[in-house]
Length: 355
Image (cartoon, rainbow, N blue to C red):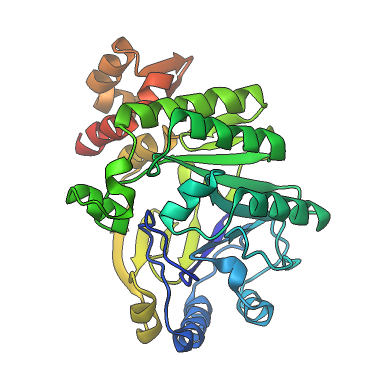
């Protein structure tokens, strides 16, 4: 089966750490963007009926229900095994009955850390939103955390983890802060500037320690890591996101959306304005390399991969080296990253991509 992703890049404010193609845009653009989404969905070749839906952003929880109905009526089939809506705490209207899963972008439960990133919510608001979801019968929800925010310490990280224990979510995502030119905070760090708390970012070693502590604490709560950044109670793994890591087909609609189907990958133009203005938003179409991609995405999963004989032959020197260095673990015919290998995963993946 396959999945559908819809990009909704509109936000009430732009957070300092955000490197997505989202932001605060003129209201008039929203209508043009919806028209472009419908145009793209209608032009799609549906070789299958999707069984998962994910609407990400941006802040999709701010989409007007009439607009949402208009969009989703264009999709084939509506009996999704999983339909996820991303939501910013404090911007959570009653959830449309289309959805049975919500991802809350909490990022931190320390109010001072949230203020420094431009977030408007508080820990108490996240708690209210979780109660709201449960009251609406949505027991399947995710909470996002970021390790490495300005001013974050081991003590404040522990506070966030204790809030997670208190709220008892079935799924948690833990991301280490990404530093690149696509976010205001990342650019300031790269330029050694003082704005946005750039000089108060924890050291790399401290960020790694936060991630490892999160893994340990979530394990104590019965929330196990199934992918490098994703942790779940049994049965609550994200069905949609697993498609990305298992190289199952998915199609993305909207600005900067990516798709994979029948061995091909493509992506759309990055900005909302460019997307709304073009009749054909695709900017790149490539054939996937199964050998590279299975190592690159499959090894992100705790279950790892089972290399084919040709893959063993092609990558035997690197596999042997990583096994000897304790970066890989072998379980019968399967390979997976060790706990230490997870921390060095980018370097490991790069070697296979370059092979």
